[in-house]
Image (cartoon, rainbow, N blue to C red; front, side):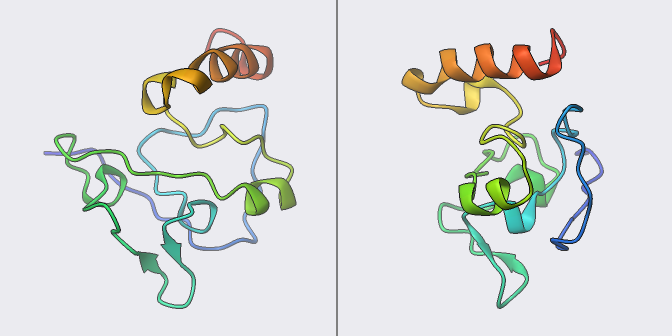
Length: 105
């Protein structure tokens, strides 16, 4: 059984950039794969674990940087771990997330 999933489809929500969000939420409008017109994931690459709650599914979250910027959130805000990134961005994630969240990465 997967973790409980919370869907946040409202851009009006307030986020504290200094507090790392739970890794099991679907960031919806902050994900590049989110379809605002249909209010659901496009599932371009398959079902995402954030939507299914099944840890055997992949995490397909892809930051929508314009939305993150608009809300003052860093590019890595909803990324659960450096392991979800290509090799060349892992060091940046570790450095920037540690600077913002301390050792709670």
